[in-house]
Image 1 (tube, helix red, strand yellow):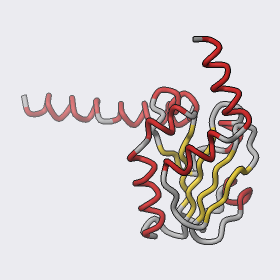
Image 2 (tube, rainbow, N blue to C red):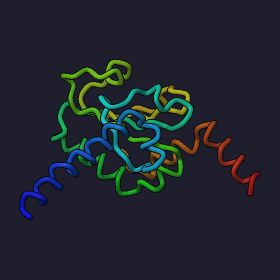
Image 3 (cartoon, rainbow, N blue to C red):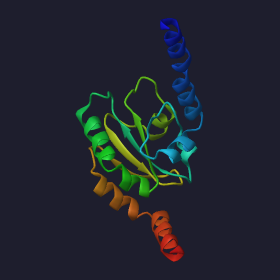
Image 4 (cartoon, rainbow, N blue to C red):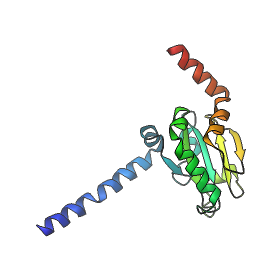
Length: 155
């Protein structure tokens, strides 16, 4: 009986890893299924989300940076507000790996960057921002205003 339990655990343990690997191959599908998912810059590219989502990228030199931690907490506390605006959260707290996103946006220390759906940088901040401030900035973007008008017209 004990060997059967060990066998079952040995067989079932790799399954979540396989599911994670499959999901990591298609970050857009994972984000669409769970918009509160936070991706690292090494897992995705900005092109993955072009015209689908507004990337909010949080950079730091280390994940122990208090500003980095505060920003992630602020974003996760109001994830629903961000999901409503098609926001995907990306993080990069390892300057040693030089991800493609880090090469494109060239942060120095802590930086918060908000990109439009077309991939242009709409906002850069050297300090944490509250979701309320972020959503106001996003709501001023022309494409977001068009999305709101289209949704009202459809109702």
